[in-house]
Length: 117
Image (cartoon, rainbow, N blue to C red; front, top):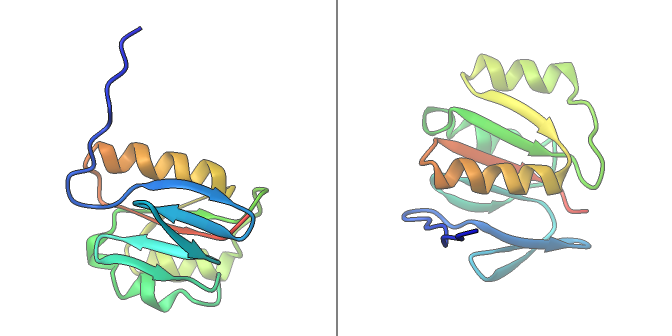
């Protein structure tokens, strides 16, 4: 099998994660983070949607990582994001990290907001 290194030309990938942190482009970030086309910002969870909504024109799909396990997105949060024109997919944070990197490598207008495991 031939393996090719994935190139991320403009935006940093999620390199890894662990208890309470994410590693993005080699840099450790404590707590939740949001990765948007504008950059990486601290994210405090579902009560902190304003920074994501402010970037709605840059995002086609938002992957929300709910931590170690998948949890449902409250309907009010989904409505706010979708009304802003952002497609939303909810999953566990490990799945969101993997999906984000794949979509990023494809050049998609993707963002991820992930809570630590």
